[in-house]
Length: 318
Image 1 (cartoon, rainbow, N blue to C red):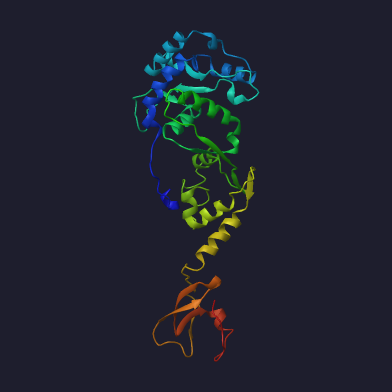
Image 2: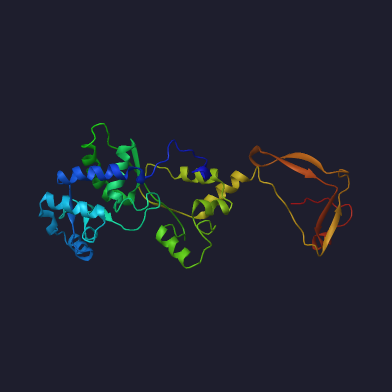
């Protein structure tokens, strides 16, 4: 965000709320909104694909409470379970077929270490956090449209436990696709793993730091993105030329320009009437911009260019 000149009012992490999320889980299990399931992953995936309910759905609430305790302890038995939302296993919308809300992960968390063994999925954490932090508008790309009803349902169940919380309004926007560019994280990770790029700051990657390293000014990127804000709800495809044209137009008035000639074959050009010492000056540039330059009496040029000149010629050097 600092690269874009943005200063957040507050920085928070999902891990800041792990304990509160877990506390709410206890109540959501008691209200039958969540249930524990030890169905093997492949079987669960097949059941969801075929719109079949899991046998674990009909187990008593006490069984889910016991399984949740085992999950939090990270026991061998607990690791075979996950928590699922009790929604509509036969729904035409695959997102509502009892998706997973919590999983057991024994890997240490980068902030909380080994304190927790259970971690929320995005489907639980996102609506919970937005409600807890008072987010008025949740910005989501169109690819999440099928999951919007899940977001609203989960948030409604959570808000029922916290009367002071308010629902968030989902604000959809289309993704921006850049031509011939691996924008998905999974594709970028593949390039990184294969050693085909230097890292996330490689200018060939469409990361923010990569773009900055490639010479893109933050204001140009912001201007480009704002141009894409339209009422249309469809994904757009663009060439990189559009962004770089905006970038060039932005930098043109202020960018310093430096010219060079090869050491071998350089020729000294003497400008008649030039200043005896380097002289700062300003010239009118494009779109009314004023550019600072320095005037010289002697200028190095390439030998091939010098052969085209004769004494007394009037020339323009670009």
